Image (cartoon, rainbow, N blue to C red; front, top):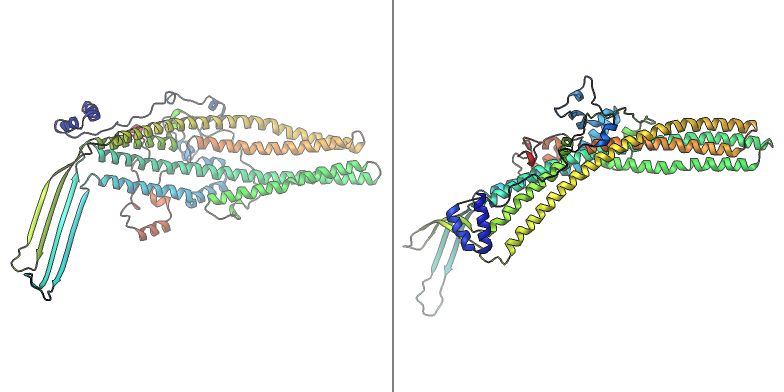
Amino acid sequence: MNVLKAIATSLCARSKLGSLILVLLAGCTTLGPDYKVPEVSWLDQWYSELYGELDASPVSGDSPQEHTNSQGIAETDLQFWWTLFEDPTLNSLIDSAQEENPGLRIAALRILESQAVLGIAGSALYPQVQQMQAGSQYQNTQINGGSTSLREGELLGYSVGVNAAWELDFWGRFARGVESADAAYFASIANQQDAQILLNASVADLYFAYRTLERRVVIVKRNASLQARSLEITENIFEAGQASELDVQQAKTQYLATIAAVPAIELEQVKVRNALATLLGRPPGDIPALDVRNQPLPKLDSIAVSAVPALVLKRRPDVRAALWGVAAQSAQIGFAEADFYPSIALVGGLSWAGSNVNGAGDTTTLGIGPALQWNIFDYGRIENNVRVQDARLQQAIENYRNTVLRAAREIDDAAISIVKTREQLGYLDEAVVTSARALDLAQSRYLEGYADFQRVLDAQRAVVAQTERALITEGSHLSAVVDLYKALGGGWSAADIQAMLPEQTLNEMRSRTDWGTLLDSPIAPNLSPTPESE
């Protein structure tokens, strides 16, 4: 069959007559290339060298998280990775986002859209034309004067007919259309799963950013309180005549500079809260779940994933969606190539007509037979359309390869960020302790008259800088952990439309349109297929 396709394509480029001969000799075939998984030479052996530095280990205990598959990937850990932070507030926020986020609902509605498009493509396999026609005509003739042989009177005529046409899928045009729509349907499912990943990671990232900013306000205010106390002591010493006014003004300047940072942090905190509210499908404003103040940031001793093989990368929904995109576009080449060849259809019609004319009989007509339509002069339109589809296929292949590269880079970037921020935290935590000790010593020596006030100011600045750097780095470390789980493709679960959309939305859609069983039937019996496994 592939040989016949090659011959047909070659003859078509030279002569339409040659193609017609092949119609008689070869029968029907499916034009265009069959889908092949794009080659990525490094993918099967890929392993992030940085992953070995994460101290990664699976979670153990009496929870379902301890169950791993044969590849050593803790599936439940990846699916519900945010539970590893043991933060009920974060869990509730993600649950709310999954129920209320508009973007996630749009992704679910695109699945329904792709199902309907798939239905349209499938209907092309059946008779494409089924038309019923009916009509009647009333005519009243009256003659005044003159000489004519026409007779006056009334005439009533009526007719009804049924026409049908079925273009046979000799060249696989419609089969390729179904193949393309089917791949687009699975791509829409993968895109919805990818939307879940991005949403869950965004909620976690914003939540930890909010908590980090909240802690920064507390620390800045605490440092400002210490500086206020230092200012008070300096003022007392100045009033006693044992210090210069310069010390007082420097202490006051440092205190005001520190406390002035609070409004800027609170401004950023409100912006982060508003961004989080948007993800939750709420207008800007208070989020009750965030009202619990001064919660400590969680600490993870290890990353609860046992390995990061290439299989994890292939499981990412965006990678699978890119593969389905290749499959969908591959079928479009065969769909376009079918225009080179004649369309062969079975055409039939049945009609009945009658009138009230005396002596006139009713007429019944039945017609059936084959029909052929062939654009014998396409002026390069069909040929260039095939080239367009092939160029789009190569774009889809390159997009897949680029998606895989980006996925590997994201895993590697997140891994090194975790390693280096954890390393940085170790130094900064020690720097916070030493800077606090240096401040105690500087204040004691100043009060005892063994050091000037500049040493105290320098020590105060060091405490403020080191505590804030340590807290910001702690937040960056948590963000890197979130990025890693997002890069691994964790945080999505298979669901049906009823779970993706609220009942109110489904009822509104039912009231507008007859959706048949689409809103109630499960989507994709196997939610983890890829073109590679077909």
